Image (cartoon, rainbow, N blue to C red):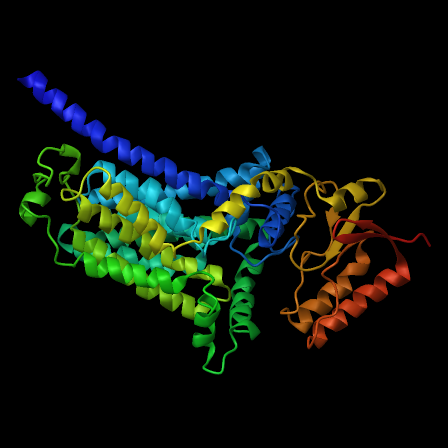
Length: 520
């Protein structure tokens, strides 16, 4: 009799495992092509910053970009091992986020199987939706945010605080969402010392922040990072956010444009559907709150599958419901204050992660086998904004090209290597689509701002133009060209062209010219 019962348990466990494994494999088959960055666009600029750090430059001093420091240093450390580490880092952040969602779901009483499906099937689709751009800064920030919340629901408050400290150094603008999430958990658990735990988390975040600030101060990077706050605030409230209805509406329209890029409206609608479908007062059928808190499992509707039954929990499902609401509201506020591009709508993926954990908790003990994993897969897809399948197809088709672009030296480095006497260089141009610094470790970058834009102030453009003549070689990107109704940028373009014409001889490279100073 005992053996027969054991066989039944084994069979039902296998019955639950097969759909879970299939949905996880399917999710990663769809998500993985999107996680392979290339050097086109902003990521090429990030790669060049990482390469200059690898060469010994100081961030915000010898090389400049406007993102937070830990993002670049993680990228640089990865590239110290292999240029393909860019892909590994993206995958790692998704795994951290997925594990965090699984922990949050399990803490609220979800079955282990459905928690893992939520974390490792639903979450990859959530994080690679329409708002996701490969190799950008939101993904690491979201991973740290979800990881901090997963520690809080397990009363690992000090660890949660340390993770928030890392978030401050990685994606500062997501910190309000993380802080609001920790506050929600602390208020729900105030009888178990949640408020005292919140103070420990605050101390942990301050300690980690102090460590990071101290390291930047020793390297001379701190003033540049602090000045970055002012520059980013000016940038966020500049022409990009201009609107006849004010900057708040301007930010929202930039993140949620009328052409649907970012799919923020779909994400918000999907989150509202989850909140309506799983009422805050919901309790698992056949199990009282006291029983669940004590870890007494209810019987599933299928009658026998132990994996579908409730698991001992540390927080009530209502905590997840509140996390979805708060993360959604605070996320919209962050977007309304800071957003300048559609990919900034990915801030809402924090609420999406909590929603997946809530759905997994709701499905545990009621819907089993294929339906529950597929519903979680659908929830991840919809809360991401319902990515068009063609985008995934295009990413898969371009994987080989992207991997090749990460591994090769830049065309500019090949030209510069042909002139061994060149000791210093500078670059004029916008986005660094060739990741020019790959292969240039032995040449000094003399002008930290190697990428410039029409959105830059006249003072920044003048400063860069005055610096360029110090370089033995100039990389002049094809993006240095006249733009309509941009007088300050056009004046900068004229100065670059005049400098090259008067003192440099140029060699054509892919997408740019490499110009060498003429001998006296």
